[in-house]
Length: 503
Image (cartoon, rainbow, N blue to C red; front, top):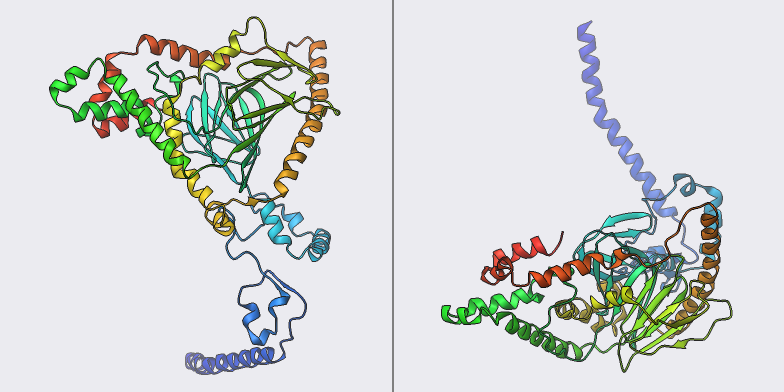
């Protein structure tokens, strides 16, 4: 019996290769037959591989192909399916597929359009965050720090006793005080200017575009001391103190103890002015911003300004002196379509309903304190010019080459449609915010009837931490620990920046 079993196994092993060979030959015959009866491709072939129309056996002409982008914008994938948020039932729905198929058949380049609509361009980077800064991208909030990216649609919030400086991609600086929320909605590059759309949800924001004039030497201490030192190591005053202290002899060091800070400030301003002159030769695009608050819209060109808003209360704004700048105010109301010109060096208040404005008279100490912190910011200005060379100038140089700009930096160059886009945003913001104001008024009325109190005045949180740090810094300006920084080597100086530049 055992011999019969082993004989059967041996016979099967002998016949198995022959069976596999016969099956393989049958598959080859079938595939060969399939290649012979392959039908011609007829009609438009969309989003094909680049070489599809180059194969003669496919019989497809270049006119019948709609090619996808060979290289998508920077930060984009070829696939446009949102896998992280895709609902399986919707993805497998036949009725939805039929509807989408009809739309896609009527729009041959639908895939490119969808990908472009999903593009979120880089608006800027976080230069400094002291305290708690959170970036909301949709409903997801993440903590940000030095060099964190801010994309279109992001909302940046600062917590209590916090402050943030954001560097925008044209060289503009934006300062957010404590308890402030700003949405960076849009950035549009054209060959003649750069346009930004921002919304101040609450708090205080300082808009500071890049200037082209040199800075005068001022030995007074910097006012936004809470933000110092910066993690841009060669922008701090201590960097220039170290250079002078370590380059001199012992006798020179003793002689420099009392006036080393003044010399460092002079060298810092000199380096700043040198960079401004160099960058002016390669960067000349003006900057226009539309900053929307619930009860008013500010449209500015090449001018700095402060704006403050408390939910349900008044707004305040002030234009800084800028001979070549422009600033217009648009009030709320469905018939308020004209811009109101604004003078320099004057604080204005906008009524909570957004229907009127007036100069601020009498005691305005709270809003004047907010202006104080941006009066002398030479370290931040120097860091800005260094980042202009690093981040902005390469983008501006590529504006004449749209493909390079898209593939290397992820930006699209706008043409004449930019003017129509700006007009639409202005009209849309006025209408939607007018409607929102009525909803907010109704909500606050209900809260007051129920006995709840709503704070409409400016809170001290906006300036308390910055003011305390500035005043205490004046008292400890010549503290021994601070004076020792000039003696540090590169490693100790780097550790000192990491320790004191963020918390």
